[in-house]
Image 1 (cartoon, rainbow, N blue to C red):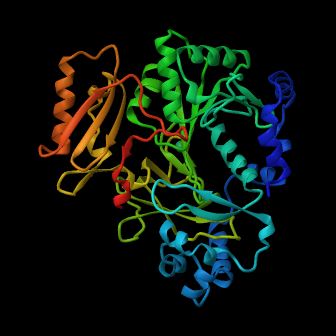
Image 2 (image 1 turned 45 degrees about the vertical axis):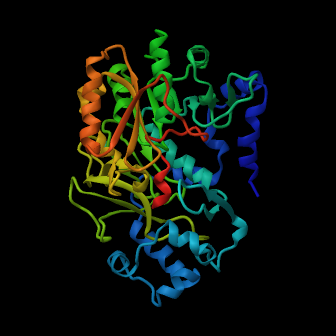
Image 3 (image 1 turned 135 degrees about the vertical axis):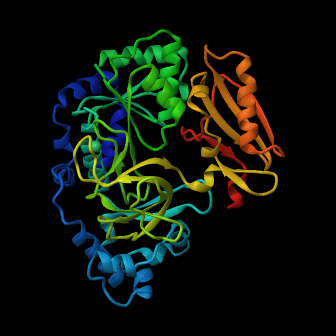
Length: 449
Ligand SMILES: [Zn+2]
């Protein structure tokens, strides 16, 4: 069952824009509307004993969650004991023992069941605290403050299909003006531009792919976007060609963060740096190598492993997210905060695999272009239907000339291997999934894993 707050958040957007526009202007302190969990988490700023919270939830799991009770007979004493004793779990393990991960001693009326899709394998169903959205908002708002956002009204360009008679809808509670990213065209970006100016919107919450499409269409139509302070971007990695257009060419910052549907760890950029700063109060973060050993060496790449501090109903402990990142350090020289820093986050590794004819594979990173080649194009995507064959979709920009075609062909052919076939298609638009998200690689071979 959804909470009343959730119902308000979901249904209010379908009011007339005129009424919501009035409510939007009247809502000067939105934090007051989000409730106690929001206020409590909003105030947090370091100093909490994360070890105590980690030990507490782990011992709760050992005592009352069947999966852990079977594996561990005694409680953990401290963080070191935790690291030595508790093994890693992954999506596959949780998916095949879903009921065994639910606590026997928690009132499940305070929890709600959610299912995440995932790109391969079985969808994962799990229990999550009903007040979790308030906790999330509090953490997100603290992050966005680093981008200069301070309760400003936000434009939203994510996975919203709007009714055909509405160009935008307004949520006066969350202070969002929501657009339809499936409708992006030269005419529609003009409409968006007008609405952004009317509501004095400087922060745009968007998928990087939608921000990119919006910027490209706006640039081509000669529209000025200098009033936008930042794109707030989660859910997808920011790709080099997106940053080249949005930040280098148009001068707009992309402020990105990393989170995931299991809600175990969270990290975002700071005001100055494009490294992800891990929020130690959100959950317990580890980066581990292929043997499960914790990485503390700058430049090393490992898998992101998370442990919840919040979800006593279905605690996931040392859960491998399937996402990979590079370790940077434990202190940011720019903002002077002592936090774990990571960069180059790569989504579920297997989804980046491009298979060769001999059954081996390379990752999409292996096909990365040199930066001078990126400057000739406005977009890039890979499509693989069968091993040994790769279609590369490229959007040319004005600086592209036919001499470069051979450079691109040579680059991809060399990286993919001469026994394999590369086809380059020059296109006007890249492919967006039905859920509105962009994937760098669209592959039929993901099920192989
Ligand atoms: Zn920093």
